[in-house]
Amino acid sequence: MTRREIREHIFLMLFRKDFHNSQDLLEQVEIYLSQLEEATIEERAYLDKRFSAILEKLTEIDKMLSTSASSWTLDRMGKVELTVLRLAVYEMHFDEDIPVKVAINEAVELAKGFGGDETPGFVNGVLAKLT
Image (cartoon, rainbow, N blue to C red; front, side, top):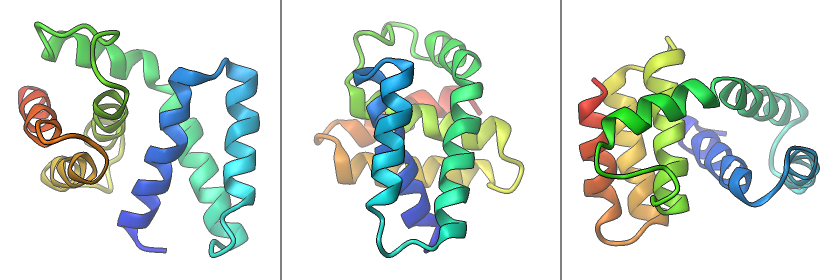
């Protein structure tokens, strides 16, 4: 599995966050991981570990986003935008293996694939304030 595919799976797992309570979210993620037929056991374990690491930092990540997206509250952001931003902020600030420029570029690519026409520009603008 490529880094881009891993990032996309993490995005899809994290997207469920705002639609389920904590217990249901864990069940949903387990179901999602069990359906990844092309993934090895090690890859599934890595996805689960990375997802959990992001959830652990979510309060910090959301505080950073709240300050950088000055005229937008997190509740007002679209779920795709919020999820892409959460993943990118985690990569930028908590993952030493991913350069900031790569995290921003990959976030914009995710935004292009899953968001609307204005999503990539919005994501890029918010992340630029966090560098």
